[in-house]
Amino acid sequence: MAIVDRVDGGYLLDHELYLEQTYQSTVVGDLAISYKFQASYFDLNKPHLGNGQQAAVSDSTEYEPKKKRCRRRRHKRKSPFNHGEVEAREYHDEIKDRLFAVTLRLCRTLKGNKSLKPSKGNERLHDLKNAVFLQLSSDLGLNSNSISSVSPSKLNGGLSNPCSYSSMIKIDDSFYLLPSHSKAFSSDVSDLSALIKDCELFGKYNCIVLDPPWENKSVRRGHKYKSLPFDKIASIPLHKLCASECLVVIWVTNKQKIMKWVRNVLFPRWNICYLAQWHWVKVTTNGIPVFPWESLHKKPYETIFLGHYLCKNHKHSIKENVICSVPCMVHSHKPPLYEVVKNSLTEVANPRCLEMFARSLSPSWSSWGNEVFKLQNISYFCDESS
Image (cartoon, rainbow, N blue to C red):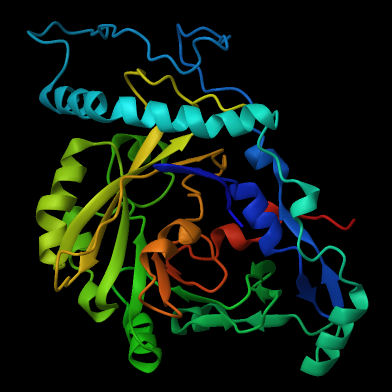
């Protein structure tokens, strides 16, 4: 379970615990191995402090928004902020009180538990004996040399793990973990044929989460990934993937230009009715926002838009929610959303779910992207049983 606490208007997620539970029953040949994502990626116990910010944050002020300060500019201009910055500040002023209040209530759980760390009491399968998996391996005809080797040229057609436990595969000279009941499609946005064919065979998706590689200055400077322009994102034939009234969840940046384009251009083009927006607030293991609430350059939250595809009526209602968690320090590794969004998928018994532009896999989900196996590489994990 990723959800460790819930209050009115928000959820506290434990991404690290979710990953630990996902891979603690992994069959590798004739062995059962418990893997966990390396803890150092979640060892964020201090906020990110920029130049001129205090290194210590007292308990009485760690959630208090700081007073506005004028930004220093090298070049003089009539206003200290450009039009986009003014819109961003207005948006922040509109939502900050709600985010602040919900985050404060959720992070009281952190203070009560000292820090957000996985509890050994929550482990589901650690007491299972290795013999159980030896029997499973025998039934499947597996042995110590049975790790499947997959040619990269075949990944575009889709790769799945139909088992109820995680497994390991080999691609070229590297090893990757596949969660239970997961399916992966590896291609770029120009070729979605395998994903569309899968929908024709097994049905379209009831929930699609997208995390597009938006264009921004930070990405261009850091060369973290290849971004996509608006027209390329809009060209995705989402209608070939969405079931009727599919819940569409899309991560957006805090840039107003992107928010407006998604809501006013992309959603109408994809025949999506806008429903609500959620916010992911990133905190340290001690419950302190990773950036000050009034930081001029970076905010401690990211925005998520939700909508329904071809909604036939307006009875659907999704509340504004705050999702609070310790972020993974691997770039753009978002927290798992399924347990939060599944409350909006009650009309479907076994919903088919898809993540697009994925860089990792999730149990019982399909994932598509040109780096879909990136964070499944065994180098990100450690053997917990050793």
